[in-house]
Length: 115
Image (cartoon, rainbow, N blue to C red; front, side, top):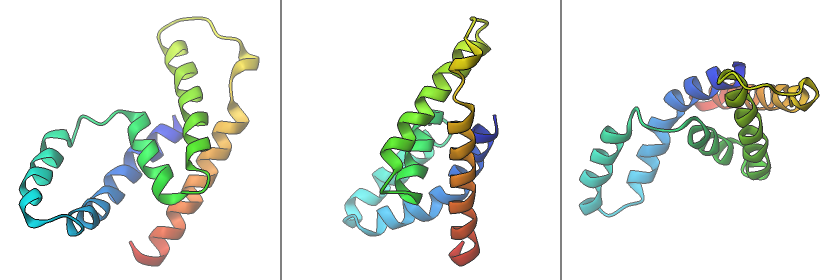
């Protein structure tokens, strides 16, 4: 839950600047298309896609591995929240807490410097 809250908040905060950066690298003809895509997709991003975007931007060297950990934790969370039994030993509590701490620190460092 902590990781999900962070992802939703950070994605909302960080995406506008990243999107503007992406737009600045495109020819003017594509700007309207990308802006429309941004508007249409504004509330349709999956949680794992949001985390992937954040991970690859904040931790490009370890983002891929972090995304796999996130997906594993999310699958277990989804299984549990849909009423299925899961083994307590299977819960990736330490890995998930590590992701929360890592990305909170990375985001705080970014926010403290230029956001």
